Structures are given as C-alpha cells and as structure tokens.
Length: 132
Image (cartoon, rainbow, N blue to C red; front, side, top):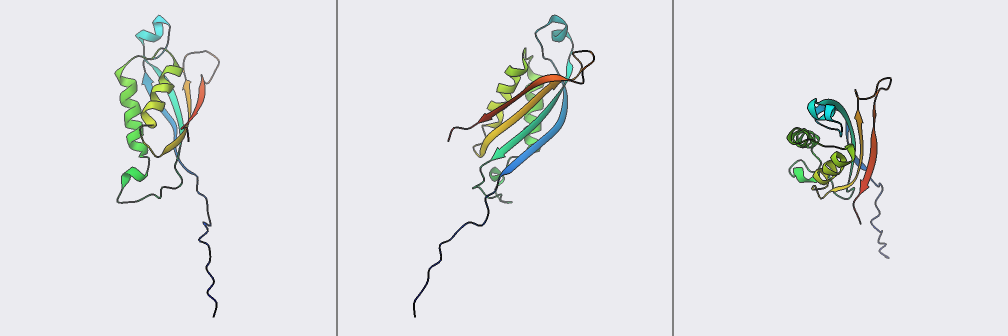
C-alpha cells in the first residue's frame, strides 16, 4: 500500500481591518490665531489593517487592535496639545497606532467640519504602510 501525503494548503487568505468611522472630537488645531483661541470639530475616519497571519485570540488581546483603546489614545493626544496642521496630527496618530506591532497599514482621513463656509468639510487623507 502506498501512502500519499497531502500538502497542507491554506484555504483562505485573510485581510483584517479595524474601522473607526466618523469619530468627531472638538480639538485645538490650525495655523490662524482664531483657530488657536477656539477649539473646532474634526472628524476622524481610520482604517487599520493588521497582520493576517496572527489569529485573534480571546486569551491574548495583543492579537487584536482594540478600537476603544485607540479612540481613547487619540482623544488624549488631541486634548494634550495644539496641532498647527492636520498633517502633523496625522503623523502623531500614525506613531501612536504603529506602536502596535500587528498593524501593517493605516488609512487616515481627517476633516475640519466648521472652518470653511459653504463646505461640509475640508481635510486630508493619508496612508502609511509598515516596511516589510
């Protein structure tokens, strides 16, 4: 009798993302003097892609990105200081999120909601990916 060995093939390739949609915080941001005196509403939309080879484990929370913790850290970051540019704020958020080693990529959209009349919002979109 001949024994046949099957190669262990993965049936699926996962892409795992954590989404934070329409987080609105009142923060101190902007170059102009009037922006430095009064906080303004900023909308955050964040997509965090994680390492698909790490299986989520109920007993090991470092196997996931905790969206509540991420929101709390962003809230703390924005309360702590004035940011002159959305781009500067974005870099600080990237630094915060990429501390988690399972994060591969972050897409970030930041929008000022009340700064320009006749617009719903103005802002930036930035993506950053970890070097492989």
